[in-house]
Length: 198
Image 1: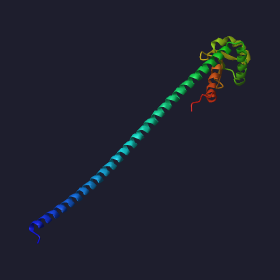
Image 2 (image 1 turned 90 degrees about the vertical axis):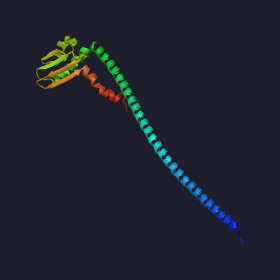
Image 3 (image 1 turned 180 degrees about the vertical axis):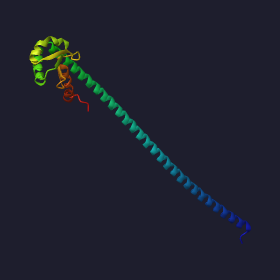
Image 4 (image 1 turned 60 degrees about the vertical axis):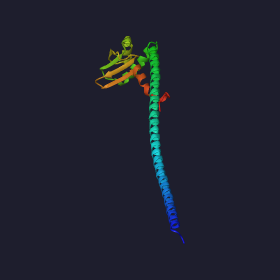
């Protein structure tokens, strides 16, 4: 026969075994819960880190794009300034050559030819021919080349030479000055000089 003590011992063992089994199940459940929570937390941290990295990369790309745009604009500005300097240098040298021409023995004949051309258009009386003050000494020869009556006036805005004609009655103005001829070459020079900035 089984004694009370044995029964009690078996009961104790059964309770102890059941408690151990429950403790083990609870520990496993806690471990699974911890793993699940840890995995979810890791996923959340990874998601946040990815979003942060993407945001930082977008900001870096944006900054690089802005920096490149600024550098490109600075480079274009430098090129435009250099082109302008070259163009001004070329036109200054051309202006000097035209001044030399205006001081040469060929200049009076050139002025007479252009005066004859102007006379073909300015056929009514009242024509005023504007010259550099230095060129007023050619007035008689130019009067003869023009043929009809005209008036001569000095014009300080004419720096290089040539003739500017005006007839108020006809409503006509012709600018055949070396200054205008040189200035009219700027557009051609910009298009054909190969100094375009793209």
